[in-house]
Length: 258
Ligand SMILES: C[S@@+](CC[C@H](N)C(=O)[O-])C[C@H]1O[C@@H](n2cnc3c(N)ncnc32)[C@H](O)[C@@H]1O
Image 1 (cartoon, rainbow, N blue to C red):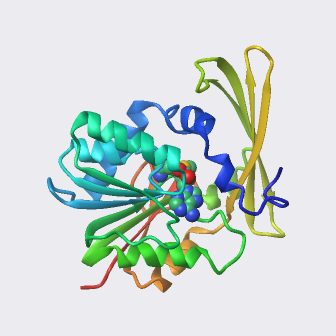
Image 2: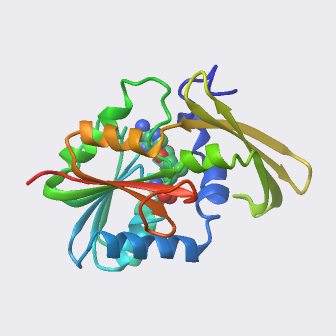
């Protein structure tokens, strides 16, 4: 089933296998580097409250809480929320997790920083829904609070299209396997499509599709500004410098005006 004939593909794509291969499979040092970047760049202090919009299994929420922040996470995937909550409880971390649609959910307390990390905004091909998620992030912040949206740097994809790559991974049942990720640019719909094929060592094959919006950095910056944010910055990752076509990833940051 592809996003073209399954317009709500994200309600089934984010399952146990994706959690193991796509999220837990991210090396700890890459996640640690992201957490350090977030902490330093947005001047997070112990006891600050972070809103983690589309938090997944708590990949960022848990280490941020381990550094002393309080975290409110929301994700649509109930199993991810259950896991994040259980992990936080087991480690005594100050996190609360909510299963909800981020287009609707507003954090119950004003937060210091709102994160939307790892290409979690932009799944819907229509122009109507996406601003709602950014607006909910705005409404979750205290005046002066910061936003950080992290996603693919489309400028780099266009400059150096990398059509596919192969990784060796382990699935949720501990089986080794090969993951083939193939990208297609859908200029007609303004989407980057991704075919994700997992082939387990016993030959069993799982093929699934995802896609995300193809915004140039300034276009996402304008959407963030339209949601009410000021002080928009377009930051390249991993270098943390103003975005160019060479950064693999893009962070758009903004501030809720005081
Ligand atoms: C690529 S994962 C990133 C997870 C997490 N931010 C991280 O960096 O590990 C995208 C996440 O967005 C969640 N998601 C997708 N659509 C959502 C929605 N409308 N509301 C809340 N969560 C959503 C998925 O369930 C998934 O956990």
